[in-house]
Image 1 (cartoon, rainbow, N blue to C red):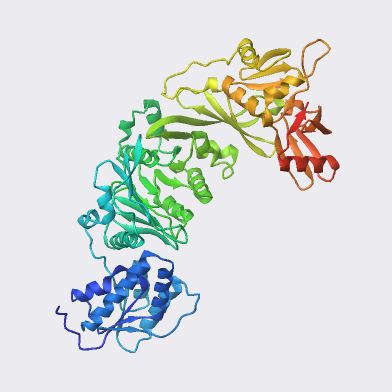
Image 2 (cartoon, rainbow, N blue to C red; image 1 turned 90 degrees about the vertical axis):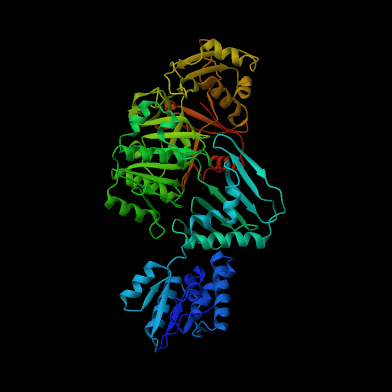
Length: 626
C-alpha cells in the first residue's frame, strides 16, 4: 500500500497508552495522514499498558494489538517504531505519566509532536508551547454499532431487554416488558474466555470511536460503557469468578400522560421546586418515569438538567446530562448552582455522598427528582435519615412515588407537624413529628420522630392506609373489642378482657400463663397480631383490687443503647416514675426506675448491668415488666 511521502526533516511522534488503545496511529499511517519518520513509544507508556494488561482491562489488550500493528507498519516501511529506555518510577500515576510525555517532547533535539487522545491533554500541551495533535475518533457509525456482536443479540427480537454473557455458560436474554420479564437461555455452545474478550474489546473500541458512545468507567476488574443506545457492564477476575458481559437496551420511553396519573398529582409535580423520590426495585421503571416527569416539566417551561452515571437517558439536546466532575457529585452540584436549573433529575442515587448532595441541592432551592433503589416507599425515605436532620426532611423530600413493574403503586407526602406521637398519651411528650401520609386520601401511614437519641419510623394502623388507585378511602376506626377478643380466644385458655384505648391501640388483660403465648418468642406472635388487626396491643398480666387485670405490662420490643458506662433500655415514656423489673429467660435480673424519657439505666460495672449486656449479646429472652 503506498504511503504519503516523508517530509524532508526528521520528525518524531510520541504516543501514550490512550492513543495506542484508540488505534489512531495505525489508522493515520495507513491513510497517509501521519507525517512522521519515527513513532516513539516511551517506556512510561509501556509500563501503563502493562498495568492495564495485567488488570485484564480491555484498553490494555487494544493497546497491545496496536503495538503489533505498528510493528507490521515498521516492516512495511511506513515509519520506524522506537521504544525509549528511560525508566519511570514504579509508583507512576497517569497524571505524572502525561507530564513525562510532555517533557519528552519539550526536551527532544529534533522536531517532535505529541499525539494525545484527551482534549485536556491537548490544551495542556498547547499551553506549554508543545506541538501537539488531538487523535480524532475513527468515526464509527450507528451501523457499526448495530453490527457489533452485542447488538446482534439485542436486535434479534424487539422484546429482548438485555443480554447476559458469562464465561462457561450459554448466552441468556431477558424478554418481555417491565410488567413481565422472562429469562431465556439461547441455544449454542457455552461462551469461552476468548469469545467474551473479543465481544468486550469490540464494544470498547466502538465506544472510543462512536460519537454517541463513551467509556463511562474502567477499573481493575470492571468497566461500564455506553455503546449508542446500549449500556454495557463487564466484570472479570479477580473481581468476578469469570468474565461476564451484560448489555441492556433502553426500555420504552414513555410520556407522563401514558401513566394515567391523577390530575392532582400531576399538578403537584408541576411545581418546579419539589423534592421528589422515585423508588422501586431494579427494573421497575424508575428512570423511565423520572425522564417522563422531567420532559413534562420541560414542556411547561422549566430548565431541566440531569446528573447521571452512566448517562443513558434519551433526552432532547437542550437537556444537558452531567456526569460526576472529577468523579465527585459535589463538584457537579456546584456547577449546577451556577447554571441555575429549575429542575434536576439525579439518577441512581446509591452512596452516602449521593444523598448528601441531593439534600444540599434541595436546600439551595433546586427542584429535584432522585431515583432510588428501594423495596417500598418508606424505605426510600429512610435512606435519607441520618443524612438529613429530621426537622429538615420535609423540606428536602416532600413527595415519594413508588413503582412496581412500571406502574405507580404508592404516592406519599411528607408533612411536618408538632404533636404527641401515636401511642403516647401525655401532652408534655409533644415533639416535632414528620407525618408520612397517602397523597390522595391524606391518611397518615407513618410517623417519624426522635425518641431519646433514636430515630423512630412508626407504622400506623393498616386499616387506615389509603387505596392504591388514588380514590378516597373511608377512614375506619379499627377493630372493636369483641373482634379482637374473638381473634385471641383461640390462643387464651384463662381469663381474657380487651379494652380499646385509642383509634389504633388496645390493652389485653390476661393471666401470666397466657401472656407468653400471646407474645411469643421474641415478640413474634404479638407483632403478627398487631399487623393482622391493625392496632397496637399492650399485654397486661396483674389483677387490681377491683378485680380487673391491670399493671404488670410485659414489654419485649424495647429500645437498647450502650453508652460508655451504662446499658440503657427505652420503654414507652408514659411509664415514667414506675419501678420496672428486668427479666432474662424468665428469671428476675433486677429493677430500675423509669426516667422522664422512658429510660432504664443500669451501670455496666454493676452485676445486673454485666449480666444484661451478656444476655443481649447472646440473644437471650430479655423482657421488661411494669
